[in-house]
Length: 93
Image: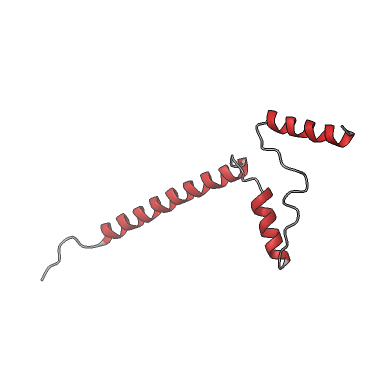
């Protein structure tokens, strides 16, 4: 057995131990794309990892946005109550 054969076996064993299917290193590299945008889209789908946890900044932004919504709702409600207080309750005909 050549040195190359041993490394392929070691690679396959490592992949199996990691719980991943073994692939040859050249597999999937022979795809053709019509333009760069398609290539970039393919790379994003194949290799991008979505964030599993929101960053601290994102969490703070959402929290502040929620607080702003609550503040706006309270202000609108107070404004409506103020308008209702200034309207005459009984109309005299």
